[in-house]
Image (cartoon, rainbow, N blue to C red; front, side, top):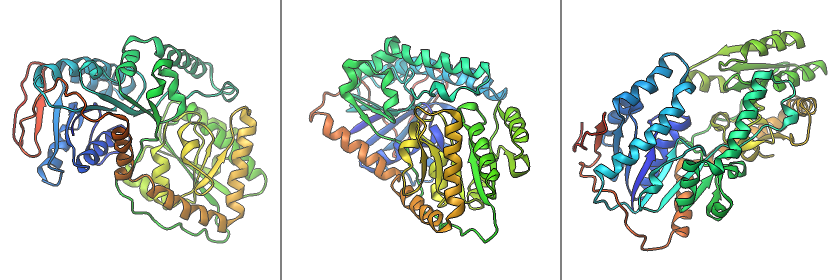
Length: 447
């Protein structure tokens, strides 16, 4: 099968969105399909370096396309450390440019399938569904909402942001671009049921819920025993935002220590809520037992997993959670709330899931503290959960994730699908085309 893969974010050796784009393309090609990846230029140098090694599957090619004026808009937010100001606008505009680009350069095609993979969100996913080619979306995330009872301690600004987000989520079903993408797609993969909010009722028969997150390296560590008298060292990694629930984690730590249990918390990451969280830690009297590490490199973070005994990830809305997979790779059990993707990923074999729906902030903080105490008081149970975490991690290997997705695609799409618009990609074995303006033609061969 010849596949055109839409991956706005795609880069080798990375996590999050670029990691999803890269690994999805790599594994689809390894299944024996011919894959052309349409992406933008953020990781072009890294892609070309990887192509030059000759290690990639023979059917995998890249078309790096980014108008210069649009790259300047993208980079403006990056330079000012405010990517949220420009990233989603850049992605939205790129979708229009990508549609014109495909129509111009792949008119006489032979694509059997278009697969949109990143950005993996339900908001304006792609315009390529307008091409006369069967299209698959996702897995897409988004749509998760924070229960109102768990917004009580939010500052008014963040409370308002969440309210506006809820209203936006509700409007997606009537948003023309989002509505058209879902209506014209043949299959819609969603990461959680919450993302269904964006799918019109008439199109929900096409939905299949899959986590859609994977790992390239399935090697795992063994759980590290906690020495007698050693505090239970908890680790959080992620943005310092109210939606991540760190304020509940600090309250849980205060409960734990108030009961005479020795536990500490290391917080990795940066964000606008850091000042509020430091003040809360001081008010609760746990600041001596909390370490704010700020932003660290991925290699530093991987080392830090091995220095801790459990991951505390009390996010109030997350479609997935790559840090959960990373924690599992180091045999760390995960404590989370029963919300969103983490609530689906974690089970009793690899961590503790604290019920959150219909409960107050105080009740959730108490539930988190009880989960922490259960690990602090029973080292044998913690080690068992650590081994379970390592086993759970191996279930998220990218080859298995992608094989499952394409097994579903093959089962749902009829044989002898019509061939659509696009054109033959006349590159050498691992071609990389780079387009920096909308009127540049594809070029062949290695670079």
